[in-house]
Image (cartoon, rainbow, N blue to C red; front, side, top):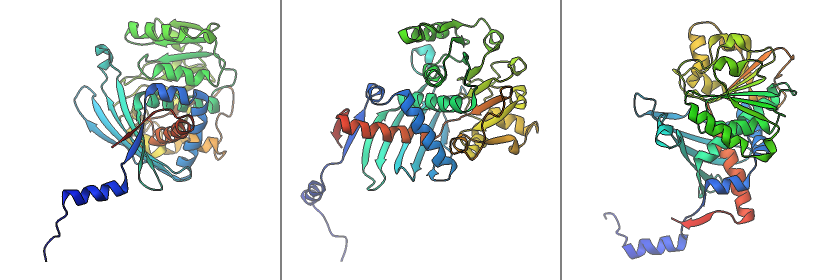
Length: 350
């Protein structure tokens, strides 16, 4: 009988009956207006619980190597079963971009209706990525650092650094921030950006002359670099310090030295993902300096009360995050709901 032919007019009639596909486009400014850091921290904590309780699907990201200089593209899907959040993120990482006046990390986030499969929203993902990463640091700092922590040291003054500071400032009363970066101009830019907020006038903000100066007596440390060599000496860590390591995301990158790992109680965002991607842990594991069992647990397990976080004032705690799509998609869902309520964003037909 052959294949029946459908005219263009017939196809058009079917599509017209179905109606146009619509999607809401949300800019970085839209996201900034719709969710605060404190709100993002709570959303991310709940997402980490779903991840740890196996109520979320977040496969290890697909990574495409684009050059020998560290340029990469990453694809990260996720589905959170309890909150019914479904979507994916496409990220590019070009470490030398800051020298061209561009962000090292750029991204798009795509949200889908988990009940119908229809597209819901498309986000400028660079800001959202920085926000959710800062929120993860805020959550880890809230759960693992000493409540009286006052001195913050930030290693790496690139695109992630500002949100890292905001994440910590959302949960701790910080009196001093020290910034360490290989590019002095970047450190100065971050310092100036932080000083713009009048609420932080009591905070002493400075560029550290050396890594050693930054580490000395620091209560909380953040590493936000793509370094393949440790950015500070672990022997100088003060008792009771807490480290948020959020930069290095490949087996070859190592922001934190073995001494830091050996001195710390280790926590991660996702054990599965960190064992695949986190050089900070993979390298000492391969050297047999630590065992898989030395990883105390996931952040979501602390949130749910299944694992204990900090036990004493003196112990050093370490949180490794390579980033997980559950963070992006959960924050994207929260932003989308708020956008519908407030009529923010631009709806377009596809």
